[in-house]
Image (cartoon, rainbow, N blue to C red):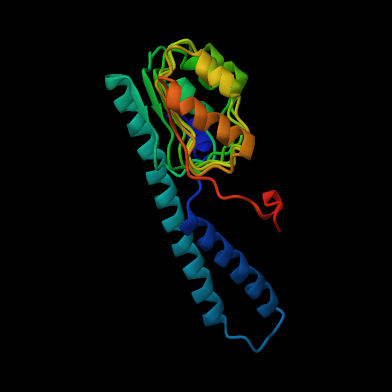
Length: 245
């Protein structure tokens, strides 16, 4: 791996221990700057603080290096089994280096669950257009690029435990989509007729979403007559909806 790829990976990793160590180093540096203006502060203490900084820095470099190696190993495995699993890699975004490493590899599955990702780049759809499964659960994503509609063979999509306020409409329009998990988001409104219009769709999970009254009732009625399994959480009536108060 060249230096530029390594730096690209580093910029996409978030490791709490490294952040704490960096913050502590910065605080000690400020302390050293202040102490140097005080002739009475022992030089041995300054040397000890500098030594601790060096030890923390070395430990951080080692931890970050392991994080990069973990991602690279996952990519190597994907070249063999055509299933890219980058779950639990502490990614804040998808490194561009991933697409370079996966060049000329036809993936059938992409798992990015349990990271800290806030945005999916359009190039994911362009580079992984043949994936059948996409798992984005447990991140901080609030929207998907429309380019994902080009992934025409997608069958299973998991966007649960994210920050979506609406269900991406193109998901239910994908020609081969079978299962959509949108559980535990902030979705209030859904185009029910679009869900029912897709003959291939088998299930959609909308549990633990703040669905508005009209949408919830439409989905509830649809679940009784449609072949699509629609999972809902019992809705609690808001105070403002109770006209008897």
